[in-house]
Figure 1: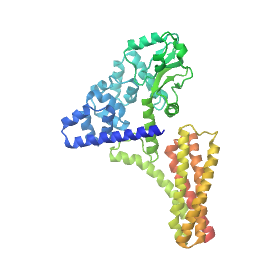
Figure 2: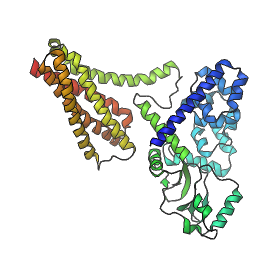
Figure 3: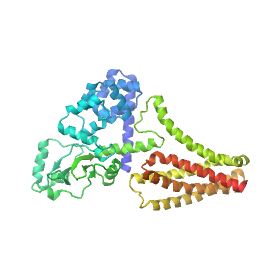
Figure 4: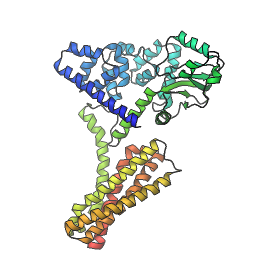
Length: 457
């Protein structure tokens, strides 16, 4: 995971450099210089630039981009930007853009194409590629079937190494990220795999059956993309076979597809916490952006009103002891942070399949113990501060007790909420934070003000 983080940081730095260099060229250079710069860029870099520009500039740059990179660029940009670019393109340009695209990349943009264009694209394809595209479109994007590509090599177990090597030389080239060949029987049933390195050093007369690996890591077409990414991470895979429900090989997934999944999952988790989508356009119209965010603000308003209602129950107590109003945010904040720590740990565990019903109670006990210990430690610290601040020992004891109660509840809520949301098929990363904040605010305020009402009034 540390290596993946280093790679991610290096990639982000490279993206930043590419964007800054291009923006400097755009501000100081002529359109011919911009066109020349775009012609030498990778499609992914062009996609980054398009996503980073306001709509008017974006469309200008798109017209200057080389048309032979249109297809790959459309496959790299997010959905919102892709829809905008497709809307401005002529039908023939769209048809030309799809030529030469890998089937899995074509599947990513196919459903965004106008109906007439998609119909013509299908008609222009040969029967094999048409069937592959239809097969790719039959599976959800976030499944192994939606990730797989069809560019792989299969061999039979009864062939010897010399025959396989001659076959590879006859092909002239092998698909990118090929580190293994898949072994199948005559019906296409997956039997195992042969590492390319082992094939190269084996005796030419050795049968494939003698050097193939049977204990392998294929995935089913219905396997969620998140599980596929976890499998690649745990077993350091470069590629793996994808099988249908009968064990027939139908495609393969490579590490470049998995890196995309990891990036998208990270973006999804970060954006969903505040009610946004990773496919949102940074430069979308103000009205559209406002409308999408208004829903989330409305939800948060309801939770804030609930916390305010709890405070209102103790209005007279606060009027009599102004110090309570000053210290209330401390109790809620401590509970919120502690709960968020537990919530993040459990959400990550669920994503990695490291937490299930079998070990949920153990996690609960551990987090509860952490909550109690931290509650006692910080109750003493905050209690002493409050006692000297307001010269009131009773106030120090009360806020200390309230912090202990809130941190215990935060630990319980941070564990139960994501598990419950998962069981209800709700993304814990999307709704967990809002529910947790409501719980810690309400419990914190109620415990602190309630104790103050009982013992100080």
